[in-house]
Image (cartoon, rainbow, N blue to C red; front, side, top):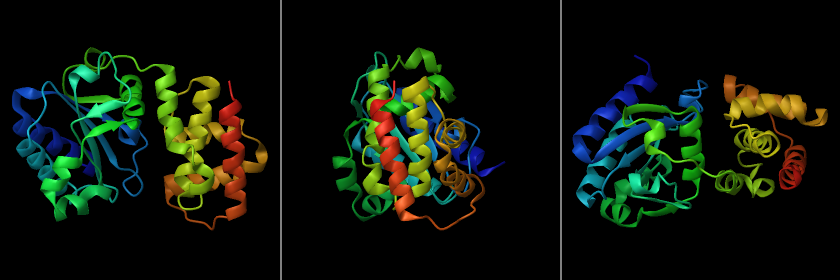
Length: 253
């Protein structure tokens, strides 16, 4: 059994134990659902849906479960949100969530679990992108069927969600070039052609559809993302690329 299968199987089993009859379903999205999972580069993206609000005690149990599973997970770990079914169909945007976790939040939870559980709630624009991915290419690991649970996300809400992720690309691209280069490609692919793509697919689309002067940059990002072949990034070049792509996304139809 591979690491992805082991982690998702244990996540599903423990979710059922903790949430009982409140659990509606567990859904896999992101690279793991789109057949481009890379243990060195990818996290495991999960969305848990419940019928009713969950207690602080259940949240702590869920967080303890996630923290323990991260020991067996890839380097980027698990990322999940818990949402109530009544915000999924019809879809509510920005989407309220009951609990959220990623590896970046683990030190906070370990230092003060009560503070984390109390404060980690609100709304998350990213959930529009996650639900769109689930409806188009996600996998139900357990529970109710995807189309039964999740309503359609409007084009406007989905675009606002993915735009929110790259709107500061010009300032942020030098800190995380691989992710942003490929993400800009898939956002432009959606704006121009309505395509819902993984980062790898976005890069392949970019090679075919973005001016040739940026082809080597996109290829470099793909090589680092897919094969972990690291190279030196030219700061001026990546910033020029980001400015070009943001302008294309703003003006694309």
